[in-house]
Length: 333
Image (cartoon, rainbow, N blue to C red; front, side):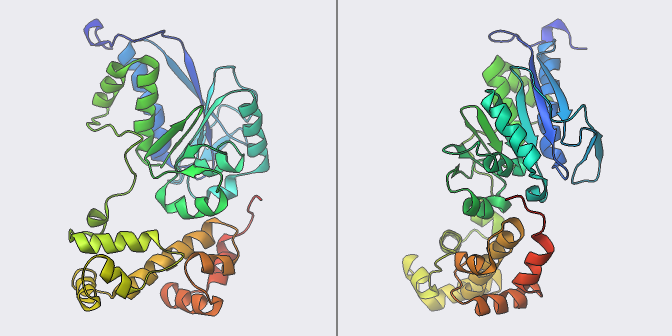
């Protein structure tokens, strides 16, 4: 129990707010736990109950997270209180858990004026329901390629979290902490949010201006500025690849110098590295969208389906069609 000296004085009205967490099967545990723990600690540091929460799911009984732990739910997708905030918790293979029942329920609650958000891959669910049309949103970096292909009416950002009106989304992982601390600060002041962060040993609260992925030099473990610049250009030009000669020219070096740079730091040629980036995006699209194999090939800079299939098989030891067959079933359209 906190002493009176440690209780944080709240700014504004200390009204009770309820969060409704909708757990999809294979939801990401850390995203959900980070959100709930922020609310729990906000109550503790405030010295009173200012937040409550409940767990719902489509079957109304249980939901299992991607770590294999099963959670007992408080109920199914029924009616909500007038001021409830809905938080959909997504995770692995979110397309298979995006059911018509869930989409219709979300649309109904949106019409009722509820604030609705999505953690981790749940931005896909909100977008599928049409709740992010014309709004800014974010999703885990691994799902960004497929999201861009499926939802061009949404302004996708690379932020760790995004709040746009009565919609909010996070990139997954610990981004839920940053989002919830932002919401606590908005509801009850920075002092309470900072006290919660201290309890969580969270010393650097990120904002919606922070991007979710590490910088190229940090990611590849190499801090050569021209190499990082070339890789950034490659990542930004997957559909229409740039030749090594042009890449070299744009960063002020010869093609031979560029070749040596890649060999020295990455043990592969620029052409091979670029091909691996394109194939990685292709695999994401095959596993996460309903795009045809031909359209996936075109989106990743392959003008010939046969060349795409040959390169894919060489790298992943399977064909694009077999990859699609093992991951493309039971999608909601």
